Image (cartoon, rainbow, N blue to C red):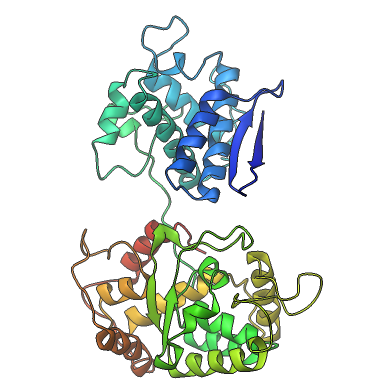
Amino acid sequence: MEVKKLTNKRKHTIYFVVDDDGKVIKPIYDYMLFLARNDKSVNTIRNIARYLKLYFEWLKIAGLTYKTAVDKKSATNKGILMNLSAFKTWLKYPTVSDKIISITPVEAVREDSTVNQIMSGVFGFYNYLTANEEINEFPIYTQMKNNNQFKGMLSEMLLKKERSPKSMLQSKEKKKLIKYISLNEYNLLLNNANNLRDKVIIALLYDGAMRVSEVIGLHLEDMKEIYMNKIYITNREDYENRDAAVKYDSSGYIFVSDTTRDLIIQYINEYLSCVDTNYFTINLYGETKYQPMRTNTIEKMLDSVAKRAKISRHITPHMLRHGQAVLMLKNGCRMEEIQDKLRHKSPVTTSTIYAEFDDEARKQAMQTAYDKANIKFTPDDTSLDELAEWLIEEDGIYE
């Protein structure tokens, strides 16, 4: 089986799965089309296609179809819970047979977090089939769907015996710690950047707490109020700028420090004023000169800058964004202020957004982190572990 990509004349892209004979697996294609029509991102559709490819590969091995696997009346069905648990185990231990007990430890090929994402994709597929009345809703899925606190999918049923069905639908993930850079490391990166454009990118990732896809998606018009330290984050459909995206469609605006503001104004005047483009983050050399940058280009740039700064560990764009969140937390900013700066859906301390800020309050929240940067301060109400858990849940990235 293979995941295929198709782009139409309007440059709309969709991913789907073909079987071993090269034929399109229609239920997967229909589901991908449904996701695309409901404004799911191309990356999301691609990932779900990959998840469903794995599921259909397992179904073939198990001698099941996507319908018989959840059909209690099917003669080949060993039980819905058994089937789903067997798939979960196969994802982690694809070489392990349920008929042979290994006397040596077997190492998982996928982490629990990855397996849970795959299972979420599979259950989303079944949710679509149920809503489309192609299959009957099964009790286990109903229980999961109605449980708002449900985060995992299936436990190691074939490797561990659990009593309750609920426990068999949960997979406890190992505690993950976010990786972030310190204010000192940020300054080292800034001082070792090769050119003004790279300095601006580093500043936007850290001081602006922007995602790399948002930095890539910036247009000059988003800087229309930069003289007031204000940058707009705008969600656009731009098929020429493939890596540009705004997660959760969290369009809005942010405030940056005076230093970042001045860098941006200087960059516009010296680099962009004589270039016929509306893109803000552009390549400066080569065949793609003046075209929007790609994510891997920025990642390579950070690697080079980190080496010059003599930072031994690998630095990713998201580590800069998380560095800003940690800086704000350690220096007294409230979670709703951090939430506002990062434009997340909700802070860890509440399930709803309970604070709205005017421009002056938002600028003050940003300034608070820098004013207190040299003062040791740990707020009592929120820990770094809670921030880490929140960032992982919201961003889906912990590096």
